Amino acid sequence: MKRALLASLTAIAMAPAVAADPATINWTKIPAATVPLFYPGQSSYEWLLSDKHPGAQGIQANLPCAGCHQGQEKKLGESLVKGGPLEPSPVKGKDATKELKVQAAYDDKNAYLRFQWKTNANKPGIEYPYYRFDGKEWKVYGEPRLNKSVQEGKQVAMYEDRLTLMIDDGKVPGFDKQGCWLTCHTGERDMPNVAAKADAQKVLKKNDVRKYLPASRTNPSDWTTVKSPDEIAKLKAEGGFVDLIQWRAHRSNPVGGVDDGYVLEYRNFDKGKNHFASNMDNEKKVPKFMYDAKKFKSKATTAKDVGKRDPFLITGVNAVPFDPAAGWKEGDMVPRYYLQPAEGSAADNKGAGTWKGGMWTVVITRPLGLANPDDKAFKDGGVYSVGFAVHDDNITTRGHHVSFVKTLGFGAKADIQAVKLK
Ligand code: HEC
Image (cartoon, rainbow, N blue to C red; front, side, top):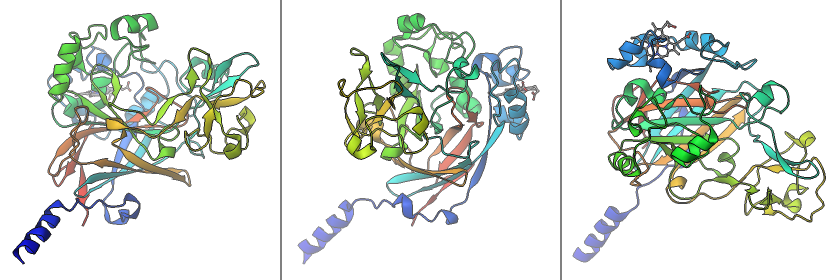
């Protein structure tokens, strides 16, 4: 009797926490916050602290952006999107603002974040550039809208839709005031004084400069002054990084995934294996995979077939190793990236997005209490600073719409309060 009781008590204690099926959450019962996003142009960390920005001293005095710009998202977006000192290559037809509807819930296991926004195009942005055979070589087909080649009509505008969150738990100085702008610097892609590839390789061992935090540099406004690997490792161990969660309509959604990354000295991916990988064999200069003709109807697609069927190339589903002797014709195209199951810390986030009637609805599931050194762990009772962004209509880098920083709370007061599921 006693032993049976003990056994059943142990069973209760050891029963795994119950996780909700995100598909069955009744979202009509969860309050929705509307977060305004706006087109930021090249309003970098450096510009914001320069004498060209009337708010520079306010930022230095630790005032939040919204302290002066509360409710001005529409005004700022409309001013920046049309071109000017902060937008040297305005995109025709680009909308100035977006409304992002955000809902949050959690249980003992996971956080569930639901997002809805309207797309500019009357179709989902699920296409990503391809490799196209020109009779001799495989060359990139399609580029994002900010690129000169697209603006000059030499390339087709093509890039996936994305939804991004940057998250801090209070350990990155200034993120609760300036949010994403802390990471946006001169020298990065599509920003002023973009770094030369050779310089980025010399200083960072990367081909370009991407988001970084001020604390990773001895001079935060000079990307070349990156601190030593030991100092960066110390910052990371102290939690001095922001988590970066990215849902991608082409490169993660088809495999139910959402990227997990972090920003410190660069925009890094978490340890493990990503949902996507390059489909170019850099030695042989040919793709690594082609479509399985038995599953996709043909081994390749062509420009005139783009948009007629799902373009995704997925290992174990419809991808087979590239056959150089398969009789390639000029105009044959295969995706630039293939999809695969993610692994390790890079596989923490799951997601599902559907596009209907001009609107994406995306639900992201992230486990609570993640213990990886490259994650910010969501915890019951925790409040986090979050910046949101949407990349819409075939664009990347700064061509997104972004929010001022908001707070997200789990069982705690915040701009967006997650509801505990019963
Ligand atoms: C102390 C007040 C103050 C703070 C804090 C402040 N700003 Fe400003 N900002 C201004 C003023 C004033 C202007 C000029 C008038 C305007 O465009 O609203 C301005 C202009 C801008 C512009 C240019 C708009 C245009 O049309 O060219 C951008 C972009 C901007 N701010 C972004 C930010 C961001 C992002 C932050 C936070 C990192 C921030 N500001 C913090 C006061 C402030």
